[in-house]
Image (cartoon, rainbow, N blue to C red; front, top):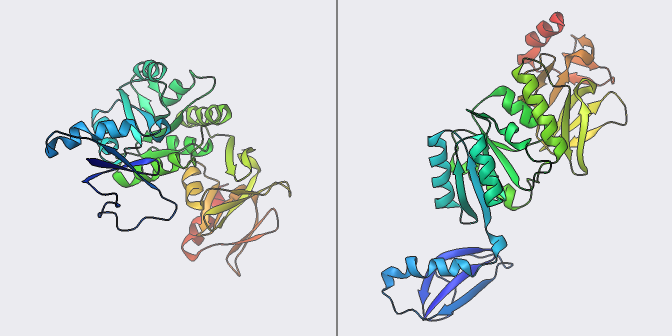
Length: 317
């Protein structure tokens, strides 16, 4: 007799003979995790257990325990790394296909109906945004996989879309998959895709985006970038102050992400570890206490290391 153990939604890939105790390799288990024992007869050799019984046990799990996943990327090395990391570390994902360009990816999505797609930004026959524009509604989660490309990253931030950098590592993939499984990455809205695609094309043609999406606990907000006065860190969130007094938003994004997002903008600068300002909204540089008086009458401190750069940038506006 063989007992197969299932923990919560995910299969614990260990077996033991006889008895009904928890596997000894499990050192500690939270009280809300339930182990379920599935017993069956097995007459083969012990060495065949992994190949004969584990696939059967996986089929006994609820179908929602696995997320059908596609990789769409034109770089063979990136395909191989992602495939290896998914197969070795993520039993909650079922890899159902790999495509090397937009056309193949589109066909594979229609054939396989995935729940999660890892999508490259630029491919020989178009961009990941071109692929996504083929869908009036996007019925699956998307995580962009991108090289360190400032305008692509800025576009993702503008649309509040999720992404991971190349080269993909086990750690950043694990963090991303955890967010997906915990529903912290929601299926993007049409407006998010439209705005991100708009920003991507503007940045590629050396123009600056005019709008951005801010994700808060209450939902998504589209705001004009020119209306932003300043951004202030508040732990892992960011307060965004706009020209209208009632247009203060608390974004579910840390300040460092906004620093990266605003890299293409000459007038946005991180003047202090806790502050980013729109230099066009500066009323006065106060030399006595090294601060900037903003158009909402708030004095923003300037770090000593940024003093000369801030003065230089203000003189060039």
